Image (cartoon, rainbow, N blue to C red):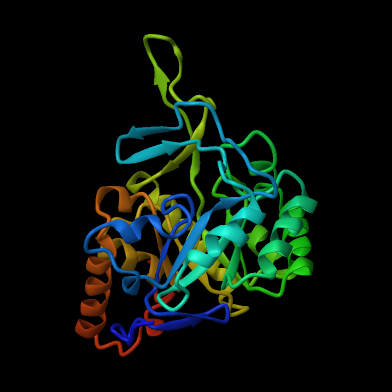
Length: 313
């Protein structure tokens, strides 16, 4: 791992991140796809979150799966993946764990399935496990788990029993009280949070008078959701700071200023997703902007900036 960004290097949930940037699940496949892009370097990122994985292979949702919207994107992939065993046995051995950290993203239709997938990744070189309890584009599990604090806690507790890896719970914005849900997940054993997942949305074809997305609805990502994501990070941080629980802040980050806003709101790391589709080399610019900001404001380390938001009277 590089020492290029010493002031950005941090240890979160027991894992060393060389920069605060995390490439988000569903946007970078299973960790090798972006390494084929000329000019891309894993040294610019702290971790890669692999594509959502279930116990059995899934074909995903019918087309259309992706639709561009003003300042964002709807997606309803439906967790298409080859199954956890194949990911562990065939995909992970191809990754270079000396370049960056890798996080598995686990999903399931039942609490038991979440635990089974977590158990498979426990016996692997993966650095941490993200629990996707908030996927808005599958017909079972997903939102039903993520929007119910009791179910969220049950899933986290089951995964906690199944693995000793650090657990990152991905929280849904489509719920009444995200801070309460976060507290329940901390009590159940979550080591960190990813805040937020996509919001539920729809696009309509006026000629057919049907939803554009084959699944009828999908998850909205991109710059359009950033104001919501910032508020949710701030709300969850009020709980997390009492327990020294880190947050990966995400939702609409497309430049360095966006990333700084999330850090000031309480994020210890920043997730990059839809922004990569516009600029695959975005992370180098974001790191440079954060570094310059720290120097200008006389911070010696990024940790000094986390959660420094001062609310108006």
